[in-house]
Amino acid sequence: MVIPDHNNHNLIKPTNFQEMGTRKFGNNRRALSVINQSLVEGRAYPCVVNKRGLPDKHEICEKKQADPVHRPITRRFAAQIASTQQSHAEENKKPNTVIPNGNDFGDVIFIDDEHKSPLDQPVPMSLEKTESTDDEVDQMEEVEMEDIIGEPIVDIDSGDANNPLAVVDYVDELHDYYREMESISCVAPNYMAQQDDINERMRAILIDWLIEVHDKFDLMHETMFLTVNLIDRFLAKQNVIRKKLQLVGLVAMLLACKYEEVSVPVVGDLILISDKAYTRKEVLEMEKLILNTLQFNVSVPTPYVFMRRFLKAAEADKKLELAAFFLIELSLVEYEMLKFPPSMLAAAAVYAAQCTTYGFKQWSKTCEWHTNFSEDQLLDCSRMMVEFHQKAGTGKLTGVYRKYCSSKFSHIAKCEPASFLLENQL
Image (cartoon, rainbow, N blue to C red; front, side, top):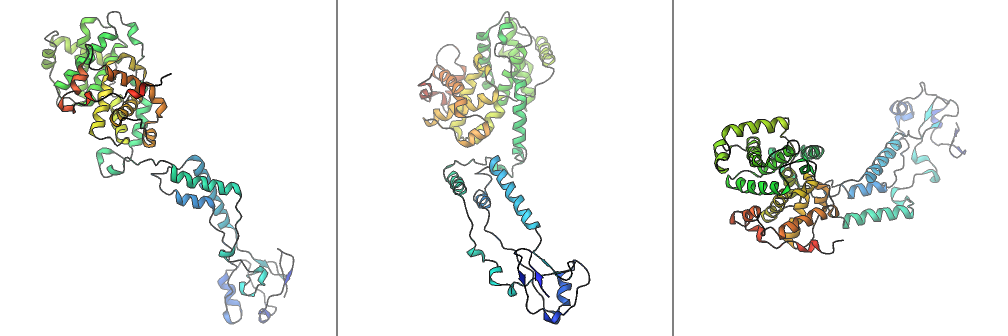
């Protein structure tokens, strides 16, 4: 029996098949185990083993970059991995090489590797030669250098995996939602132009005073940021006369306390700190007016929610945290800072605080990743904060400076401003 080789069109005459005679196999596509049982003496003939090539170069790179925390996969690299997996899947789907029987093409015979000619024997894996182009070598070297030189992005939530309050399972989605909704919490940076009886200076006096009241009542940070937000959003929609502006501030703080605090100051306490300028009835009427004007929407992302996340990304200690809150509270007083969204205010405060604390510019890849702001994008806002720091102890509005000069806040206001950020400005 002669078996044609359709690959090289040569005739191969296998040995040890004489005992088979003219015997044919019954059914087409029979299992290998059945065919082996039909052979003389029951000797099994192994099928041809496909040669395995060396691992694909992308597979090598994938192993080097297996840590998703310190080396996030880029889109380009993810596409390379997908194409590599697809090529491996196609190779695995290829059937084993079979040679049809010359007498009956319906039957197939598996050829034993031991009886093939030396030219047909598969080359050992160690001797197989893989050709790599210069471009492939350059790409592999480039990936390896990136692994060595590139700054890793730290997984800032790994330490809170067992803390249910940290909600690490969906904290990223939570902050994505904050970013989408922060535009709702913003007001037009020139809204004061529509006010007839008040101006930016009066707003600054009110907020500087409320920061002292906030500290006197020992309220939470969230309460102060929400108070300022409620004031600005209300004044952007409602004209207020000068003698009612303090009442707006007090009621905004009362609403913020009801939303954030566990223990809320009573209305009588707010009347006392205003030197009994308003009655209880006026306080309650203003509360209804503010809520109706804002349509009861007090659930907005303030700079505080971003600040906590960004301080965590910066691996801040207590000193850096105090410096950041000092700078951003100085910004709350300034009307011109309304042009910046809450997330940028928080990121710029952290960046300026790092420069103030360390004495040099520092903005890691981890901070840039979690804030979505580069160092260049934060320079303008950070420089304005440094200018506020330089003049914080001067003038009449010194409430924030005196607050952070106390031992309670580690005298952080007395630290040297990061004046080097103001150098070489265009």
